[in-house]
Amino acid sequence: MMSAPKSTHALWYPYTQMRQISELPRMVAGEGVIMHLEDGRSLIDGISSWWAVIHGYNHPVLNTALLQQANKFAHVMLGGMTHHPALDLAEKLVSITPEGLNHVFFSDSGSIGVEVALKMCIQYWRNLGYNGKSKIISLRNGYHGDTFKAMEVSDDSDFTRAFADVLNRGFILDIPTGGFDADAATVRQAADQLEALLIRGHGNIAAFIVEPLVQCAGGFHIYSPLYLKLARELCTKYNVLLVFDEVATGFGRTGKLFAADHAGITPDLMILGKALTAGYMGHAATLATTAVFDSFLGDNYEKALMHGPTFMANPLACAVALQSIDIIQSENYLEKIAHIQDIIREQFDSINAPAVIHKRTIGAIGALEMKDAQCLAGFKEFAQKKGAWLRPIGNVLYLMPPYIISDEQLLTVLHTMKEWIAQIK
Ligand SMILES: *Cc1c(COP(=O)(O)O)cnc(C)c1O
Image 1 (spheres, rainbow, N blue to C red):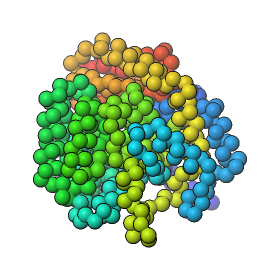
Image 2 (cartoon, protein in one colour; image 1 turned 45 degrees about the horizontal axis):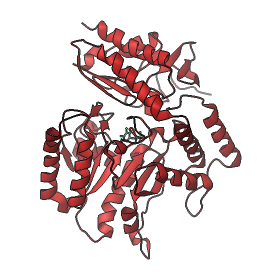
Image 3 (cartoon, rainbow, N blue to C red; image 1 turned 90 degrees about the vertical axis):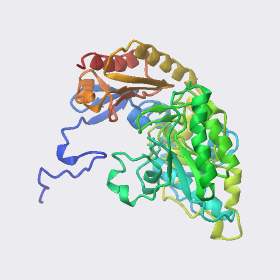
Image 4 (cartoon, helix red, strand yellow; image 1 turned 135 degrees about the horizontal axis):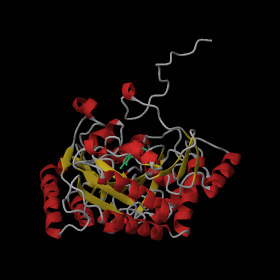
């Protein structure tokens, strides 16, 4: 048998220049927030494996939910067939998300959840007899996934560069400055920009999509919940759907169960992913209001939503998601998250280094914007030596730990960040 030449990587890694790839740590087991590596080292996961593993690794209760479902059936198509885990999870999501989001469409990743939401928006207006309402408004620095429509509503970045000339762009607006506690006048200025665009363009605009409150992959920018309230009023006034992409912010990350809860409003559509299955399985949910859902009703397929991922509502994913939500609700997770926020804030407060140009915290998110990405060259390796798994995005050093992290583990992660910052020249 011929073996492949050594220089060939069978495995193609994400967001990676494969020519420059170096030896990667190999995880062989996980336990709580700890990632055990093949070489005997262990690391504290400071970023919840792309923000998903909220209860840590190898959680006994989630494992049991998974195995119990696997022993019944691991998968069944949702076309023409249904099952309890899907029905129960849909009901559960309706009950915990903002009032009025009454219908759930499942898919297999956050990007696809976004695609589904945008398809729903565009078809909604078509179904109601409006022509030409198909453009989407989104926010500067936004990130909504890597598929084509998701790239179109994401801001220009390294993720979209290669496709810039084939993307059918809508409109991009600035987020309000001033962070979570921005004064009302500043927030209203940003809302005025939105209104000016809506006055001019609402005849062509289907929806406004945002990462509510915190833009994660685009650099952890935090903005005022008042902006979301004003956006809600304006979208209603000018006949444009409001879409909250809570793939990253959902399930407690911002200190409330959903970022929408900070603003006390209901978007027309909401997308959940990442922490939905606590990192056990790729899965996503697109929730819609009754008004959106009803627009798809009719006597034939013409108005129906013609979309159906093969693995939508996968029973293993649904069973684990149900159990994950149960843990969040029964084990006072919002208190745990408030406590994590306190510790992050306390530690960030004592950072006073010229290389750090902005500190941002909310819920179980802490981000330090550095003066440039060069300040963070070599950080990942440094963190691993200190026993922490952290991976900066561009010039932002951040943590988004699993909610079960102990104070001691959290401090190890934060001290690792601080130690690095202290030695930057
Ligand atoms: C990660 C992310 C996505 C894409 O989710 P995938 O599961 O990676 O496709 C979409 N929106 C936001 C806000 C995200 O953080």
